[in-house]
Image (tube, rainbow, N blue to C red; front, side):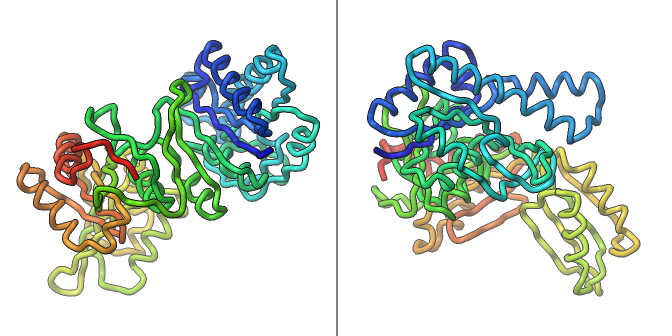
Length: 409
């Protein structure tokens, strides 16, 4: 007998019928002789509806009260799924994040998990029960309810799998696995049968929405075996593991993309040693994520700095920079919105030089202007105009032969 953690996303439990389907998938795993812990998200668009109601009351709701509000969504799902399992003859018990022992840092809206006291879950498992845990939530050591931010249910599932030393963590979603790119936009995208932790982490960080980066990071750090699979189709999904075999000599394994990008430029900075530290420390203190960074020296003793952020962070970024102007001594701030990021990812890029050159050549041949560039050992990212994002994805997907045949690894 093993222990399996299953996670069902919002679309997989978006109606009573889908909750019944999820219950059947849980029972199938239980009938294989395994103990099962299930993590669920809020039903369908419940979270969006709750946010909408809050904004009808105030444009700037308290973060603490938003956590109190949003955690109710998962509580609906855990109780309904538990009822479904019990009605089918399988003992089950539902738990909120704090009942399940999920302790987080003291940040509302985007807390990180610090520890999981799994004693209560283990006691219920020993009594033969299926344990249903609310994802996306936890509590501080002082008992304050918190949420884990976007993709928090994925993180809950992987963290529980690590704490419980589970044999496997299955992520059930509305797609059949991880694809070479988003199949909703690129019709000839192909499913990968396996992806390395590092590749998945890059894909997730670069806009692939199948798994949250924090969940992949947890899985890598604790060696949790993951499989992304369909909640509706009974077929093999995509395994995320430490090492994978490459077939067809695919150097690039996926193309990720992300829209709503803004480039911010700080012009006329003094060429001092502490300027960069001051800028990015100030932005970090306001929880503003900065992505691609480019510094250029100009004539005299000044420099310019450009970096990319999400559109939604522009107003706060400008406020932070203006608040620190006396210390930074820059001339002016400029920004350009309407941008997107397109990235190629593949562990084979480490030993295959020239991949970046091929990417830029393909984009140039298709008259797609590259505005910023970022690289690592296994990825190359280019910032382009947002209207050119999907054309760029399509030509890169074809150029690196990701759509030629079924991709197996």
